[in-house]
Image 1 (tube, each protein chain N blue to C red):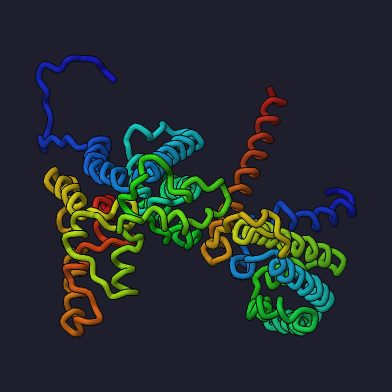
Image 2 (cartoon, rainbow over the protein chains, first blue to last red):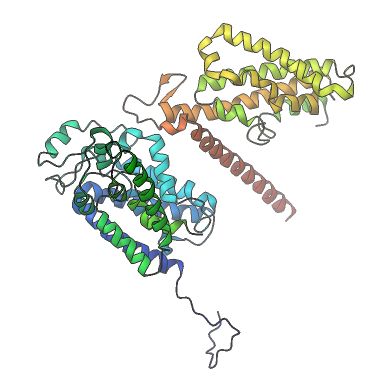
Length: 289
Length: 214
C-alpha cells in the first residue's frame, strides 16, 4: 500500500472503470429483498420476524465460524451470508420451528457454501441447499402453512415456531381454528388448485393475501424487487424471463388441451407454493457465474 | 517392528485405524453408503464381510503356492463367492428381516474390493497366521466404520439405536439421514473428522521432533 500521490496516472488500455464489487452487488440484492421481508412481517407477524432474524443470524455466525476455522479473513462484511439467511427464511413457512430453521441456515452456509470454498465457489445457491435439506428431512413442518393476517399475529407466536430444539412441534390444529376466524384459510393457492380445483384469483395472488411461504405471497412486491435488480443491472433480465416464459408456455399448452383439469397459465405465473418462481426470483441472480 | 509379535500386532492393528479400509483407503463404498441406515443392518453387513474376509484370506493364503498366476483373480473370486454363499444362506436362516433389508448387498460382498484387495495384496504373499490377522484387522475396521455411519444415521434419522428409542418420544427425526443423501452427508462428516485427527497428530509429531532437535 503505497501512499504516493500520483499527479499523472498513466495506464494502458482498457480505461473502463467498474464500480461494482461484491459488497455493492450484495447490498443491492438486500435492498431488493427488504420490501418482501417487511411485507412478510406485516402479513405473518412475530413468527415471520423471528424466522428472518434466526436464519440471518445463524447464517452470519456460520460464515464467520468457517472463515475462522479456515484462517481466512472473515467474509461477513460482503453481506452474502445475510442474503442467504433472508432467502432461506423467505422460502420457509411462516410458522416454521425456529430450531429447524437454524439448522437449515447452518447447513445452507456449511454444506452449500463453506465446504466448496466460500463465496464464488459454491455450485448451488446456498439458501436453496438449506431449503432442500429441510424439505427432505422435515416434510411435516415444511408443509404446515399458517393463515395470513391472523388477528393476533403481532401479539403471539405461531405455537410451532417455538418448539424446543430437537423436539417435534406440537399439533397446531386448535390454534389454527381460532386464528383463521376471519376467513383467510391456511391452504395455499397451489394446494387449493390441486386438491379442491379452486383457482385463486390473480388479484389475490398479486396482492399476497393468501397463505404460503414467508416471502412468496405478494407477487407485486417480488416483481418490484426483481425489476429493481434488473434496472440496476444487477440481474440479467433474460434469466427470469426464460424461467417465467417457459412456465407460461408449457402451462398454456396444457390449458389449451384441457382447461378443466389444468390451471390457466396466468395462475402459473403467480404461483404461491414453495417451489414457486417469484420466491426464487431475486435468487436467480445468484446462479450467474 | 523388530520382534515377530510386534510385527503381527502391527499387521492386525493397521486395519483398525491407520489403514482403515473405509475412512483411509475409501474402499467398499457401495455397502458403506447403502446399508448403513440402521445399526442392525450395519452390524450384519460388517460381520458378514468380516467372515468372508477372514475365511477367504485364510484359504487364499493356504492355496497361494498352487494357484497358477494367470488365473489367480478368477480363483480368488470363486473362493470368495463360496463363502458369500455360505453367509447368504446363514443370514437368511438367522433373520429373514435383516436379509430382506440388506437385499442384494449380501451377494455383492463378492465384488467388495476390500476382500479381493486383501487376497491379492496380502494373503497371496503371506502365511496363513498373518493373513488371518490382517483380515481380522481389516474386517473389524470395516465393521467399525459401518457402525460409525449406522449409529449416527439411525440416531438422527429415527431417534433410536438398535431399534431402542434413545432420544425420547418428542424427538423430531431428520428423515434425510436414513435416506441415501444422509449416507453421503454422514460419510463426509466422518472423513472430515478422521483427516482432521490425522493431520493434527502428524502436526504434533513434527512439532515434537522439531523441539527435540532444537
